[in-house]
Image 1 (cartoon, rainbow, N blue to C red):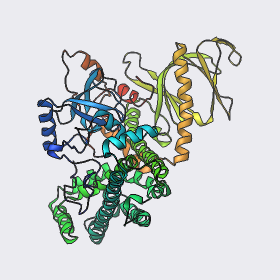
Image 2: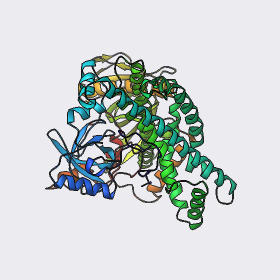
Image 3: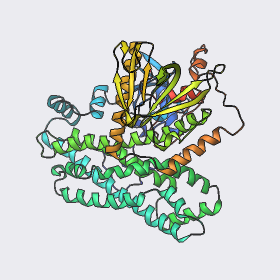
Image 4: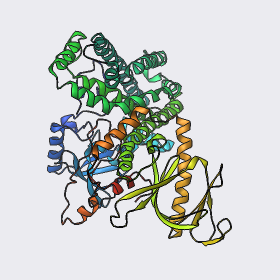
Length: 559
């Protein structure tokens, strides 16, 4: 895992919020202040010591953990989890209300202050919902009197400004200390390698310098508590989406850098770059982590600022709006990251389908919306066929099950959803086919005379499919509005990885589902497959499961 900037890496820091420009607070010993998701060795030992001493340790969910396994604990981002057992590095045992189970340690961060009452902690994380609640929180945490509130706001403002200045220095060191030197050594690095390792960090550096100048104009040096910086975040909220490309590329950067660091000449070269630039003793992968951490910390800083800003303050409305805006930026980055991770699963699913014809699924799609078995009737034969349907954005693939091996699918065709109209049919006689139907819906082409009728076994299943078709259209519209698309390189790499996982000539056998294995266990046991260890992890952990089970986990309607 990449290194993290240690205490003292920043020259200036606010006493209240910690000194680092990283995503989470470091472990502070007696204060029980914790750091990164999953924790390091020393931190994990401290957690277990607290639990052994009878202390209650809480963690906050960073991302949704959707699970179909009976002995895993599902939760949503923002949920508070009591950590019961943290002896394993990757999987912890936790409790939410009356539910207990395993969950990936990398999906949570431990509470910044374990001594803080639960009510205050939840108020600290969430938005202030009402004026009275906001005043009560300020009164209990800051004490009576306006001067104390002013001092708390001053601390937060100073911390935002100092970490922003430190961050600019880190970006400058990377661009001038590493990238500039690497470009001189064309015998060691290609442009593609440098693009993979450093991503668009030079674009981020240029943007952040502009953002800092705007912040400094709104910063009141004489009376920092009077500073009005909320508008700065609102002005640049669209520009912050530049981080999406960097965060999506970061796992690839780690892989490429790891390969190079196995060769001594690259180790010596990068160390020479660091010394020449007089940078602190942190490896390159630690510096490359800072943009990922920074974009995630903005909402935390703004939440702190809002907590210590009086509703009568001129900056209050802008800070409140800025908090929501930066949450939306982080949410968009998370969503794009999840989509890119899902294309690997989609590519592996396609590689498991026999007799595939036509273009790859990824040529037009990047999201599985829903899947299930339907009875299909098409003109002119009006022949009834049982098929497995997989609804993606822009298209729907249907396959036939093997008669003997029911886990094997054969490609049979696809429907272009951009050209299809979905019609909810009433039970009874259908005029186009002149047959009686029940629990049916019709797909009619807008450009041709192509018509298909799809029937489900139960009315509830039909309702879910109708919702799925509506969701597919919304997804397409959302992607168009946000500009989301896959690059040719991403599509090609996903398909190459899928082909490697299924070498030619080997049977595509599927093992029993992972959930069945757990159900046979008499006692709770650790999941056998660990979540993929990435610093910026936004998707549920990967397991060695069936293609059916794996592709099903992409579907939002699966329970």
